Length: 189
Image (cartoon, rainbow, N blue to C red; front, side):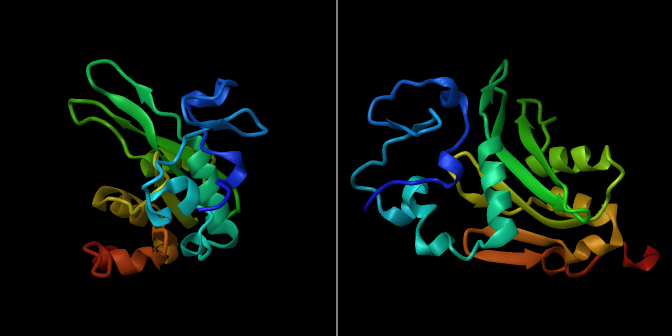
């Protein structure tokens, strides 16, 4: 398996502020604690190793940067009554080149928001509406495609967003138009 590495040092999280090695873990130069990979886990199943594997190399340039930004935005938080937040993070690049991030919020009464929606809200505060590219990352490092609600939200912001490049996995990027080929609102565009 070789030496274990992660982009930008490691995942950010609650363990980031702890300088001691957790059971089975190691501390990076920046003081972050990396989890120890189970010895029977395949490289393709392990975030720490998979992240530097050939399978992730497709994510070049800006999308890989967005992946790392989203990954480092993840800070899982337990909320009251079985709610949680921060286990999914999103990074999007607006047309201006500015990067906006957001985290998910999940509460038991189903009022929560997706990380993509939080990142879009941050972008809208600056008056921008066009998204060049977007990625959502789960706390284990896997890439999550946007749900239908998030796809629709992105499409409703700006006509040019049908060209938004979306990471839908570690090995695939598509445009929003590919995810929403038959627009219900085309009549009013």
